[in-house]
Length: 350
Image 1 (cartoon, rainbow, N blue to C red):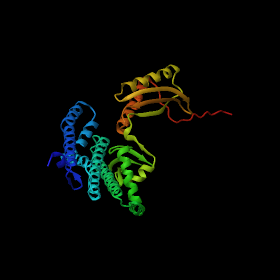
Image 2 (image 1 turned 30 degrees about the horizontal axis):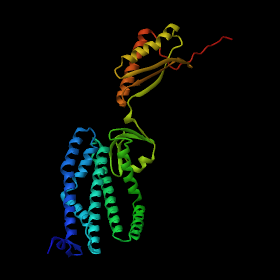
Image 3 (image 1 turned 180 degrees about the horizontal axis):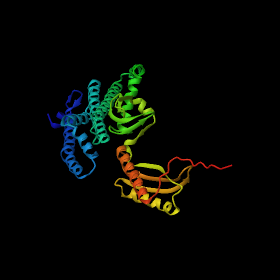
């Protein structure tokens, strides 16, 4: 038997020549994929080490999930395209490659989700925040796997419309039953990622105020100045207008001081300079202005404005106290009388 006749021998619906071509294609595809894994991937790793961003490290991590068995099966699938396969074999091969590719895609997206969560959390040390982020990551991954399963079933010829409809109706029923809990849960996600406040911030919510002690999955706990703990649902926090004093870089102080009408014009002109000098000497204060504002009922009114360079209320009050005490001391030295409510009664003899 010559070589030509041998190559035309049929086996399982294909000639020996077809099998040889398929085997050659398998070796070629496997070599290309192996080359990509060993050479190109190594070069990409070296380049990633030189860059400052970490997104390329994440892409390298995704590529590392592609193991040799996947490359081998992918090469086998491409090589099988050179053969005439029966319907069952072709269908099995198509299902296998579809499931495996979908699996790799889901793994890659999961790595991206983990990367986004890590970047969003940054150096966050709050365990509750980490738990919420992990929960959100878990929900996203569950939805991803569910989508992948439906996609595979749809490509297998299964009618997934009724299944999706059933899941949708069931999901709506569960959502109605757990709407309050789910509302607080998603509000906690909003708090963790938007960060309108953090643990340790002093906040005002309506007529309540206090220091944030813990941000939970369902509620946030606030320590009020009286000592008790205020427990507020997360959904209420996200719906309400909240004032956060924890982010203050400095506090503005505006107050008035009145001096006696008997103060001479010369002393009145010196008062703004005196007060400015006192404010400038303070460690945590920033002078803004001092003006002779008004003629009051019983005093000549000066308006004083300055900033305390701290958001801490105790520091603010200490600086304010120091300024006030030094103003009194300076006025006493200069013989300037601070006015107090008084009335002068004039009596006429008839």
